[in-house]
Length: 135
Image 1: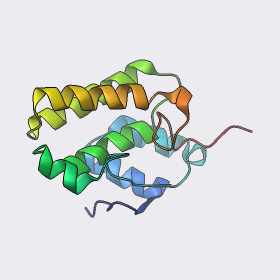
Image 2: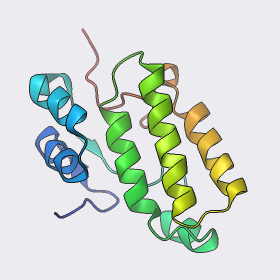
Image 3: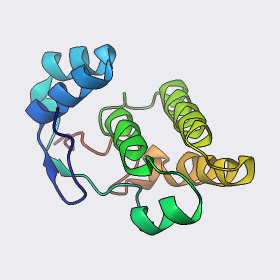
Image 4: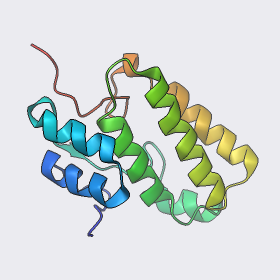
């Protein structure tokens, strides 16, 4: 499976393939049931940080792929589902920790995605960011 590079677009069809690759069956079901509810987006790696530098400095060699899995969960997260968001954030933190980050860095990164990814903020990386706006 070819994973997207930073700057690559992710269509709904590509997202389905990626979710199948990672075993995110619940997201595959959601995307296949309502493909018209989602828009194309651009993969930005670990949002707001330079992935390559950050992964070297803080010994997280697989940061970009970890960010991709987290982005898929966020892009297609169920509106208003704070439990699903928390699960995605905790899984992200566990992956970062298991990839080599210190406990302190893991806590900092968890806090950043937990606070900065809130749906209400409506940023390009907030919970549910690939959902089309309802008219």
